[in-house]
Amino acid sequence: MLNKTKTLQKCTLASFALYDAYTDFILSRQAMQCTAATLEFYKYTAGKFLSWVESQSITTPQEITARHARAYLAELTARKLSDWTINDNARAIRTMLKFFHAEGYMAAPVKFDMPRVDKKRLPVLTADEVGIVLKVCKSARDKAVILLLVDTGLRRSEAIALNWNDIDFTTGLVTVKRGKGGKARSVVAGATTRRALLAYRRILSSNGDSMPLIQSKTGTRFTGSGLLAIFKRIRKITGIHITPHSLRRTFVILSLRAGMDPLHLQAILGHSSLDMVQHYAQMVDDDLLQAHKTYSPIDNLARLR
Image (cartoon, rainbow, N blue to C red; front, side):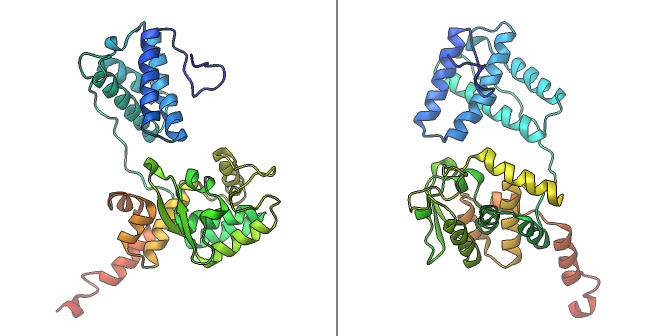
């Protein structure tokens, strides 16, 4: 049984009926070859929900109703969690309950409305801010990491999974062997980024082709939390809101401003449609001002006659 004292991302279930159904669900995700991060996501969200329903005297999946899901999500809302966090929990719970019904753990499907996510302007760095961030990087590693993420649009998990032989330093092609959904794809690192990576490689003691690209001081593969520590340090110095995902959005915005074709951007990001490109490419004030200056119907009346 999963031990709650080892990590908050595990859940302890006394009910064998709930535990067996939950274990079967996690095994099904493993059989689908979900990434370790995805499995942890389900354990932290769906697992927490099952622990909660058990505290409500529920001992079998059959007893779970939409009312329980709504009450649990209401508790998360009362804790002032973000819209996206609550929505993530709801998605995981919905996926698990669909599995329970499909596999016969529940006689009838459980349906509930998904929590609404307010559309908010997400943080994106300007070109000037990227320059400021690079100036405060204290090590070759930190500079290489920032350049790599801004130049390629890689996710945090994809960047730390890279080995040195995943980069062709002649062409700049970077092979992502297992992106989101287990999909492989290629991205491109420019000449400046490649030079920064080579400068970083020169100071490493373990720099063989099969070694991790981003390493800890002991030569082991960098962790996601280690990467976040870099951004926390930079944020404290500069006051600029910087996260791996804000750099991914920055990659989108700056690439579009530089004239990249959205279809090429879609392929680099690893999305099956342009929808997510449009989601990332939110217009910022400078873009709107420049667009209106160029295309204002009133300012251009003479030209349009």
